[in-house]
Length: 138
Image (cartoon, rainbow, N blue to C red; front, side):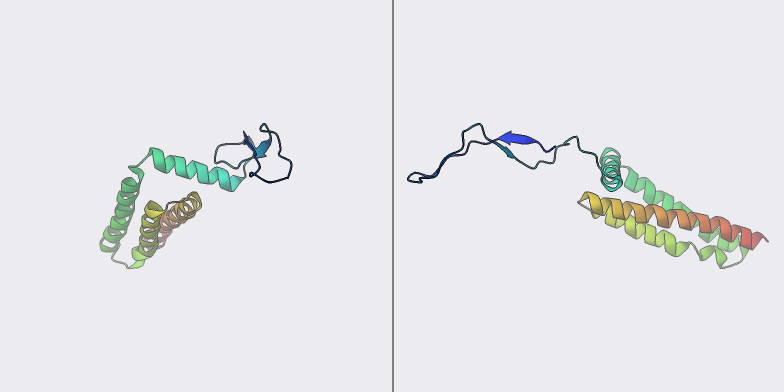
């Protein structure tokens, strides 16, 4: 059920139409919660927006985390004497780009999109570190 607001309706002077009473109810759309059930997308958008609003340090922590992952890959190149540990670096670069877009996003759908892409790129890159570690150690 939408939020209802009482709006008085009046007629212009000289208008011969009938006028509704001043207590007529006209539905008005608002951004306030209306008690209606929300879908998974709307719920996800709200969760991402609230986390980003409550934790402004999250951007910096995520950037540091990506830098540490990239540094681990670079150290592994020297340690293993193989170029295979460089495979996850493009994914971490993409995750950093998505993080920059997330920081600049101004609407909830964009925040959800960039946060999802950031998390997926980071997780796949982190997974690739373990896969490459198994390949090189074999």
